[in-house]
Image (cartoon, one colour):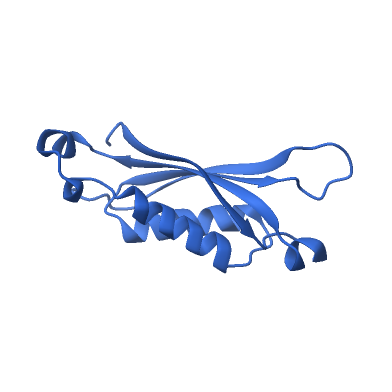
Length: 127
């Protein structure tokens, strides 16, 4: 399993994920952090984009799902993001943090969130 991690931090979008009517109609701001588990040695050696994961592609997938889907739970949003990234890129695993900013909770809370790690059942190059 590679030890390298390609990181995207602070992907922000307005989304409609949550259980309250306010969240479903007005939405909230979300922030997503992603670590792609990958082997960067070939990319470092060859210095070619084709040998690594394109940051813009990761950003596009996270933004598309975050803005275009509607889930009740952060757990579901995080799991869909991880599944889509594993399906789209030849990577062995991914770590996702989803943070809902200004959640609708009585009291003073900056954010709520979830972190998940998902692995491909048969990583690229596995026998």
